[in-house]
Image (cartoon, rainbow, N blue to C red; front, side, top):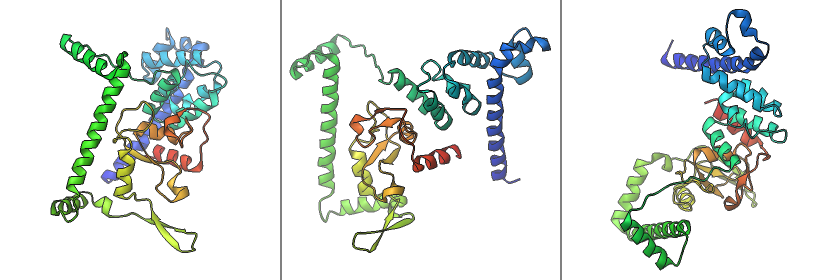
Length: 315
């Protein structure tokens, strides 16, 4: 077998192992209810699970706990066989008859990190809290800044300071950019050539998709995003994720109108990996207005989202 064949075989066995473990865990509540473990010389379901399936005490405990909590959520309980107890447990205490189907769909198709973030938002704990201890000198300086800004609250003062810092940083970047891009400047030309050499992907468009313009002529539009459009989209959020209250750096440029549908690069939004996953799983409402984004489990899933889900799960 080649290295590639060994790797593929290993991954396939790993996937099959997870499926088997999930089914074993899903059987535990029934085994516990019927006291089947007693028929095989075990004092408890914990001993039985460890002896016959190698399952840990913590996994068995979580499985029994989830079973107890999901009385009103049969679809989410059924999803345990496919998604596993750890994903399902994230929503055990907030699942009910109304959100049962939606949550079952999410645990089947979203990654664990994305589900953890979704669980936090549904519980209202998505805002990151930071504690900072100020010594006497820092307290004095902070008080002076608040006085100068005319703000009493600590949180409002910090927001004003951060915004002022970012505005100053952007102004400095623009000033440097103007100096570097003087027409005819050899340094500017050399910098551009170096950038293209270091990023050959930016200079090589991928497969183009012709579309018909109103005039009747066919204009090729590529999935490749030109550097100018890419930089403009990223600069809107200073390279950060556009999702409300998220401070992570962007990892994806999300086509709000779906490139496969519109064949253009308008309305590009920079997003971190987790919130990009949110967009393709129908958990964000009012997607075309970033400032108004909010969690909504009833979001629709289009065919492009289905393709995204399939591609992610086949990695």
